[in-house]
Structures are given as C-alpha cells and as structure tokens.
Length: 202
Length: 202
DNA sequence: GTCTATAACAGGATAGAC
DNA sequence: GTCTATCCTGTTATAGAC
Image 1 (cartoon, helix red, strand yellow):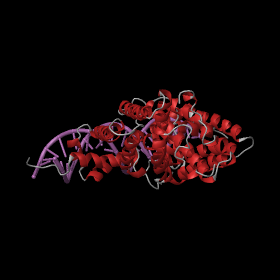
Image 2: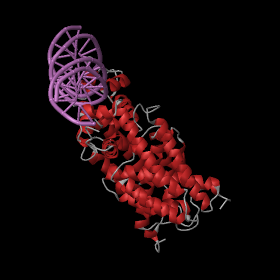
Image 3: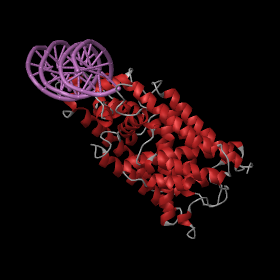
Image 4: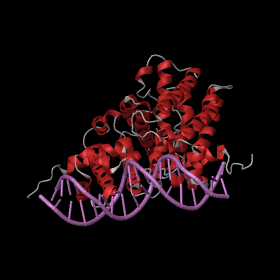
C-alpha cells in the first residue's frame, strides 16, 4: 500500500491493552491511549471507528484469543495433567507479567456494572476457564463436584492474587498462587498440598 | 440549627459508597453521586469541599472503620477461634452484601495505578487483614509461616470470589468462600478441610 | 494512514441567591 | 444547607489537509 501502517495491529492492541489493564476502562482517556500507542487521537479513530469501546473490545478479544491458545488449549492438550499444568503456569506467568499486570476481566467489569458492553464476554471467559480447570481435575481423578470446586477455587485464587498484587504493590501473591496452582487442581485432598513452607512445623 | 441537613452523614457516605463500589472511582461521576444521594452537586461540595476525591476518602475511611470494628476486632477478640471466625463470616456477609457489593480496595485501586490518593490506605488495609487472619491461625495452633500463608490465601480467596461474583453475576463464589473460610484458617492441614461436597467421592 | 485543528459534550468545580 | 446557574477544563469525536 501507499502509506503503510506506522504500527502493526498486534503491537497496537498490545499497547492499548497495557493502558486498560493499568487503569481500567473508565480511567483510560483517549489522550493516554494515543500517547501509549504513539498515534494521534484521530489516527486511533481511523483504526477503531467506534472509539474507545471498540478498542477495549478488540483488546479483550485479543486477550481471550491468547488465553484460548496458551491457557485453555494446553489444559485440554497432550501430556500428563502435571505436564500440562506446568505449561499453563508458565504461560499465566507471562500473561500477567508475574503479577504486575492486572486482569482485563476485572478492569473491564465496571462499566455500568450490569450488562455493560463487556459483561457477556467476561462471563463466558470465567466459565471457560473454570471448565478447563475442572476438566483437568477430572482427569487427575477427582469427582465432578470436587473438580468443579477446585476449578472455581483456582480461579478465585488467580484473581484474588492479582487484586492483592495491585493493593500491596508486590508480585508475591501471584507467585504464591502460581506455586500453589498445580496442587490446587491435582493433589490428593489429604496431602499437605503445596504448603511447602510449613513442612515440618505442623 | 436553622437548616437541618437533609441527609445524615452516615447515610450520605453509605450512598456514596454504593456508587464507588458499583462502578469504581473513575466511573463514578458527580452527576451519579448527586443522584444517588438526592443532593445537588453544589450541596455535595458543601459537605465535601475537596470534591470527589474527598468523598472517596471518607467512604474508604468509613469502610475501614467498619472493618476494624466488625472484622478485625472480633478476630482478635474473645471466644474460641471457631466462635470468632463464625462472627467474622457473618459480618463479611453483611459487608459485601453476600457478594453483591464489590470491595473498595479493588474499586479504588486504579487511580493512577501507583501512588494514587488511596494506594497507601489500601495497602495498609490488606496488611491489617492479613495480620488479623494470621493471628487467628497462630492461635489455632499453626506455625508462623503456615499461618501467614493461610492468611494470605484467605485474603486471595475473598477478593477473588468478589471479582468472580461480578464477572459471573452470581453470588455463589462469595458464598463458597464464606463457607470455606473457617477451614482455610483453622483446619488441620491433613484434614479434608471444608470440601464437604466431595466427601465420599475421593 | 496520519496529521492539525476544532467541534460537541461531559465532568469537576464555584458563585451567589435563598 | 441546599439550590440554580455558570465556568472551565478535559474528553470524546469529527473534518479535512497532506
């Protein structure tokens, strides 16, 4: 083409994602989004004719796509449950930048609280992750109800750890979560799980 | 006085709290805050000369005060650990309206991400809750490191469950959390904890 | 495709009457 | 203490040159 895009779609959406994840949908102004991408406001509108909402929608779609490829797919893929969860831990660590990046599902949940433009996609994303975790727990030999409970718990810990990371301005909670995740989903109920710190104390 | 306040301080802050918890600091406009309280914008400025930020600060202060009285104090109070945690579960259920109300620590964490006007208070609040949970676990006989791990985990589950409640538009995750909390802090590591659903399956 | 410039509007905040 | 009316800034969004 005559005038090539000065920034690739992927990189563009990635930069936008960063802003939304840092300060949320409402907090992100076009001025910030423009600064973060290096494009002027009018250029952003050229790429996203429906404005900020469309930007957030595409950011969310890209994140969900990445999640499907790098989290959900490995969970359902080849190898032993332990191998798969190890891969997923690695990818979660990358996705959330070791706890320094918040989750879009949390940062985009506020707009209008109910029935906002992202509510349906967010709900589906939670359900998909729970389902994938549950399937893994099932494979590891847990009963259906137990597997679902473990999956929901794992998702709670994931999001809770990210909230704590922001509140405490530390990445420790997320690292603790990642270390605990395999045990949460796979370990036998009566084992000590992954409380390795406490071994020898109890 | 000649002209009595048309709305009491407590009720006023409560209404404001509702808005901030529903749509976050950035998302809450003065128009909404005025509508929610029944006061006009100028009247809000009479009560809160420093505007929206002061409103959020007082809302946060009131919440922290309530928390100190109804959560932290009972955790350190009289009675057996089991009795205390039961009281705390009851009060958490009230505070978060059974999962329908989000946590201010999450909804106010975004502004400027780092070193925002609420960052310090939020950090202290997280630390105080962890500390109080940890003390209870200690009393229940757990070693220091184990107690701290359990406390952090409980806080993760709390906030994660609230995020999930918003995302799934269901109060179930929070109810699951409340049911699990006593076991998280008190139960023996090798027990089945509070996975009551799975009893008999494993 | 990207830019400068600007329109149209909403948000936070004040002044001053009652 | 509360109100109506207004100000000013920042925000979303568009027009049109290059």
